[in-house]
Each structure stands twice: as C-alpha cells, then as structure tokens.
Length: 402
Figure: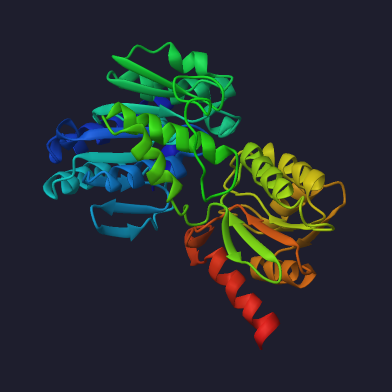
C-alpha cells in the first residue's frame, strides 16, 4: 500500500504526510525530547561507531543513556537488536523510544540521523541539543537527486540544532556545516580543529585510521558535556569495538574480518587498513567477499566497488547481499564488471564465504563486507535470517573440524 501511494501521490503530498506523522508522534508521546539531552550523529560513514563510543564514555562517567542506532536499541541496561533494518526508525518509534528513556530516568539519548530519515521528516519535533558531523562522500545520490541535495539534507540536522555543533573540520565539506549558527561549535580532526591528535593522544584497541576520527568526535561530545578529556580518552582506550565493524571473527590460521562497509569510501578505508596491517607478514594475501544492495539504491556505485576491490584484493568473490526486488545476478554482474574480469561470481552468500575460506592460506586475511552484523538478507518482501559472523564460524568448523 505504501509503495503504491509513493507512485501515485505528488512529492509535496508525500512530504506533508511524513511531516504530519512526525507531528502526531510527538503529540501522542508528549514531546519527550524536550526533557532529555538529545544527540544526533550524521554523515556518510562512522555514525554507528561514533554513537557507540559516545555511549561508552557516558556510561563510564555514570550517565544514564539511551542509544538508538543501526545495530541496537538500548535504554540503560536493557537492550535489543535492531531487526528493523532501518538505521533511523519511524517517527512513532523514535518518540515512543524517547518516552521510555525518560521514564527510565535517562539523561541522554544518542541516535543516528540519516539523510533518508531527514527527507521523511523523522528529525522533526525532536529537540536536538547536539549535532555531530562525521564526513560526507557520495551516497544515496539517486534518492536525493544529486550530491548537493544529499549534502543539503544532512545540513537540516544542523539547521534545527541550536545548542552545540561538533564538526569534522578536515572533511572537505565542513565549511557548509560550519555556516549553521549554534551557541557553541567544537571542531575536530587528526591535525586541525580544537580537538586533534596534536593535543589529544589516544591508542585504540580497534584498527583503522578512520576510527580515530570517530573517537575524536566522541571525545568532543564528552567535553561539551563537562566530561574530562583524559577520562574520555581512557574510556575509549578500553573500548572493545562495535559488532560487525572491523570485527575479527577468526584469528588463526588466517584472519577473517567482517565489516559493514557498503560505500566506496568506507570499503577503500577497510582495504587500506588491512593492507597496512599486513606489512609485517610477507606474502599475505587479501581475499575479499563483497556485493551491493538492490532496491534501486545507488546503482552507480556497484562497478566502483568492484574497481576498488580490484586494486586492493588478491582474490575477489562477488556475491549476493540484499537484492530486495532486483535480480541478484544482475547486481553481481554490475559489481564484477568493475573488477575487469578479476572476480569469481557466486550467487549463494554462504557458498561464497565457504569458497573464500577454502582459498585462504596461513597468514592470509579474508574480509567480508557489506552486511556486518545485520540479522537478515532482504529479498523482495521478506527478510531471511542471516549473520555473516555466524556463517563464517559454521563454515570454518566444517572445513577444519568435521
């Protein structure tokens, strides 16, 4: 029914419909965000990790927090897996979640804010006190019409947040986000900004230079709330990481890493990190399993993902990811096209993972991207239970212990 309405109704009516839902949700649950410090994180990559890092610091500082991201919903000690497959759920869900958080005595609520969510007015009638910008690279271009419109949509979070803005000043689009007025602005970066690695030394347990940016964002938010910088750093140095984000599932005789990366920028950073980590081990190969989502989402990036894999990976297997209503083989072919004939094409994701494990030799690194810890594969109108990490362990057991 919803899809039919999308096709027949003019965009202005759809926009009003979403706006009205946002207003109704806020009214029904009595505008709960006005009584809590609401922190919104937006950007192309790093949102989930940044929310988790902020939550980790705040909890160690004795703050009562609620957390809503692509992985889980958490109110104080109670948590559940996000099975909705929506990074930013609908208006009624968010308002109800915040109402529950208030009832449990939470002082802070931390959530990811997506461009699609903003486009559908899910940010409306949410009283954000802090807005965080991580980075911006091409994504959701087809949904928004252009990169400029995608950027402008992200900017709406900063437009409605009047108190504190936390901005990655080293991102090439930071000037756009800095122009929005706020009572306080905190900038961060590896070399630039108020919070940087010149004045902030930090040693993370989790790999990837990109995670240093996420850590600096989290430290900046903590400082804005009166948490001592050294305390925040110590908390992050104990941070164990995020499920499905550069998660090492198998350590020996070769390493298997599962990561959520599904954008060109994120995928390249994952490959760069793993290539850098392997320099001490001669003859290490990178064996890569990847795909791309269907549903008409950013088709332009499919061959780009394949091209990136062709530059970094010694073995490439292109497989099914979340085809939705598209032909999965067609998506696979489009990704494989970018590899210039370097890829093996295997439709069944389990079989693809098994093949990657069979190819791996001692000291190699197998990296499986695109889904992270997502609990399902989306095919048309159904969700098939799935977990890359669980499948890796099952297939590894079969190969080495059966």
